[in-house]
Amino acid sequence: PVMLDEFVEWLKVQRGEGSTSGDAHGS
Image (tube, rainbow, N blue to C red; front, side, top):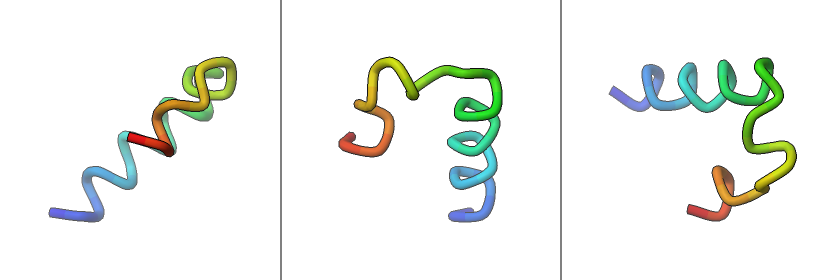
C-alpha cells in the first residue's frame, strides 16, 4: 500500500536518513 511506503519514508526522515542523501524523495 502507498500508506506503508509513505510511512517508511517518513520514518527515514525522522531518523535523519534521506535528509543528508536527499535521494529518498528523488528515487
